[in-house]
Image (cartoon, rainbow, N blue to C red):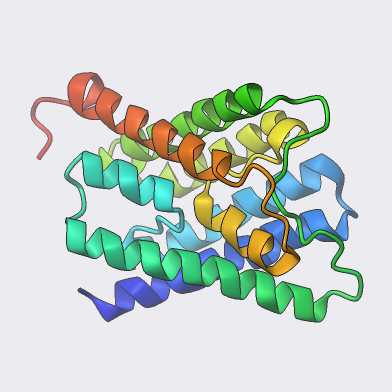
Length: 215
């Protein structure tokens, strides 16, 4: 297991929660600001650390890549550990520096959204995100634009899903603010939904979309 990979995943996930959840907790930029905060972190760290760890910074992404055979199981376990740790540390530091942390940008369902609806939203949006990762970064078809495509996919997903579920798409994004704020409402949904979405994207890629000539 490569220590550099784990450090890259830890820092990247920390940044996603500190910046993304931080933008939501501060509440100054509205939905567009929150979407851009998350998406731009992905873009920045895709180019900063993509050559080191692949910049998963999301357990659902790692799960999808594991299903597709793009990462070994032992390495995936290491990624999951540091991703969750990064999410928790990001929320801890965010809570310490914000003068009014509020709910720390915890991912919760809107009042008019049922559990079933929220689950479908998280599955579909995570599918879109991981699908983009497979067909740009993993396939190599997008070249240097892969990081931009992935970040923009997260932006558009949050623009739609933010008002409904706060668009986690990422168990590590959920776990940190949940633990630090003590708000565990429907937390299972934010583990099951992204995991199912990531698996579905992997199955589609390896079963249908992957070029036969790809390694």
